[in-house]
Image 1: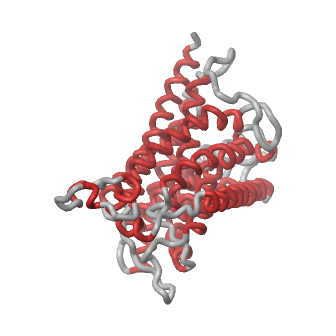
Image 2: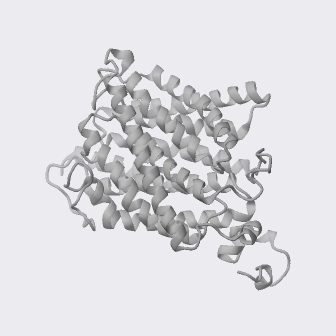
Image 3: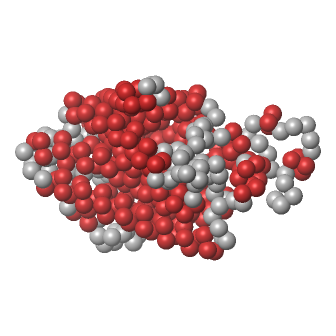
Length: 424
């Protein structure tokens, strides 16, 4: 068997494992950023929805993205059966697993807009619908040979495909679910429903940061030339720049170096460089990450001022930073590195590539939002609401949805049935 085939397969398998481990980072991020009474629910539903997403991707998602079809969607290769293709540069099964991980990360991002108030049934049904109707379509447009790929849309590892798609679904969800109880006062001012564990959120960012080397560098799909090292370098520098920028802007504006904002800056830098990490010079990765760190600060304040309750800041970290990251390739892509599309504006390419990037942002973002909104609105009608009752939300989803706390020491010395409200 060819040595490069084996090496490529091992490298992408390692990358796939790193991306799947990012699910653990998202568990810590979402639990740490929300209140203790919902921690067990968040952890459990994340594993459950990853499982559902995996099965749906095997049955339909992979074929909808990479199957033979048309400019809109793939129509073959459903119920993926494994097997290898002669002349392939790496194992087909490894490539399948790598792509499955990306699909499930986008689903996890979407659920940031559900946090602390959605029924478990809402998660279960939307996992299936998002994994069939939303993510695969956009992924096919850009990565599966669809119409945006034909235009030369640059998105190396998914600022649009994974992050913007998930964020637009999260926006649809949070608009339909409405703010959490106690988030806003009658005069419109916001209350800080602080997450219960900043150590969790800091550790989650480190885990996601490391996992992102699988996300971005793994998307080279090859070890030949060790180009994955260059992609990893750009990824790391953008994250570092985003962290510093968010810390500085929060310090300047708020008078304090806000820890959650600093952590969101790191993630925003990672999201932003995801589209461009293989297309830009090293110095540009620092600029892209730094700008993302500033943008995420103002984006969070923008959404909160408009009473859009986004507990995990998915709209800003993955949406705003995803838009900036996608557009940035239209500015900074170099002639030497632009293996897809054309060089950016600052490298003599004019506005053509920037226009393609903007078209991709607009169409992908609108599609993800509109389809997600319609699906969730239909679910809201069919399920008699997406949201738990007020009583259930107040006592927490750990008890109301699962009958036990994620932190059992919270429960007083009483029988489990007595801890549940009579209406549950």
